[in-house]
Length: 174
Image 1 (cartoon, rainbow, N blue to C red):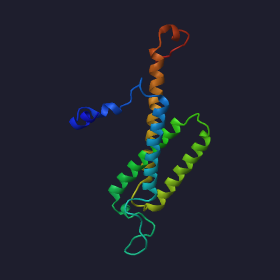
Image 2 (image 1 turned 90 degrees about the horizontal axis):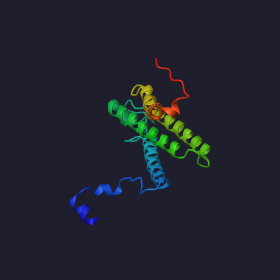
Image 3 (image 1 turned 90 degrees about the vertical axis):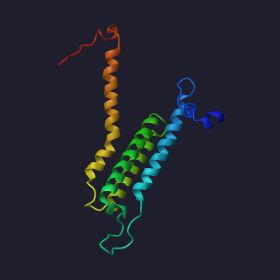
Image 4 (image 1 turned 30 degrees about the vertical axis):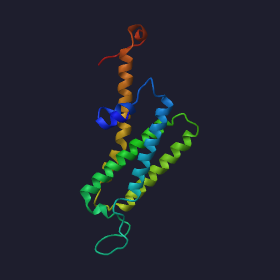
């Protein structure tokens, strides 16, 4: 192992997921930890934006607004990327905890966290710097992608079945 690290020869292969070696429960736990860390960091970055917030109303600034938001283009990129990461990590958390005990409570807590995040970014972002419809669109991207992937898998899974399994179904081609 030490030799692989020092020579630079595919040392990362030891850490990759292998279906026969790694247990699904262990993989789920690792993914939950990673998704929770991403959700925590992105939530914190949205609630307390980089650079902080203005403390007073002097020099044309409004107290409580993000300092970083006055560089509208870069703040816009930050806000969309941060929201996309938070949304994707929440999707992973909800998906991996499906049918767990207290899943309803996890969903309620997650929805509350989304509402808190949304109200925080609305509170610290000046109205003129960001079009929030793009932020909402960024938040929906992981969910829309997951829906398309599921639909794609359902369609092609049905087409890959042998004819004997599909013989009792009527297929309409338009």
